[in-house]
Length: 187
Image 1 (cartoon, one colour):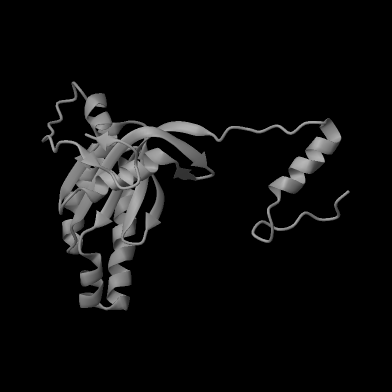
Image 2: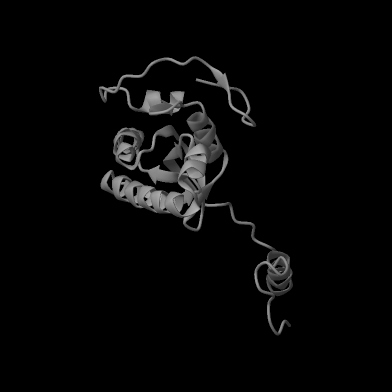
């Protein structure tokens, strides 16, 4: 039927595979994306553009490499996994929110040795597992929650606050906010 399927990126392979499946079986199975419950932690270097301009490209790259290594070390020590480094920050995932919050606290302290300050956001929700990456609305919410934080600040969604009841963690109420592109108001 087909000598060679096109490489990914050249054309969409899925429609071709769907037609082959339809021809062979009479139907096409549509699988649901793999969804997992995860706590996401977004960290972002405060004032990174200004710092990069101050240091120059080579020195800034060195600081970023040290930052990325530190993030990987601290996230791993707290039982999480770095999903990806995002320019001047990172997306990490954890099996529970308390681990993510404690990790964020340590990261905010540790980066001072690099002359940096972080802002962090934590949210728990169902994410789409896309290979080693995570996607879906819960990831977007985590990023938007992190954008609400100031230097050396960790902002968590109301979901996280509710999930860590009894942990002894204390939170200041920041009220309800619209999160860019996310439906509804978020505490």
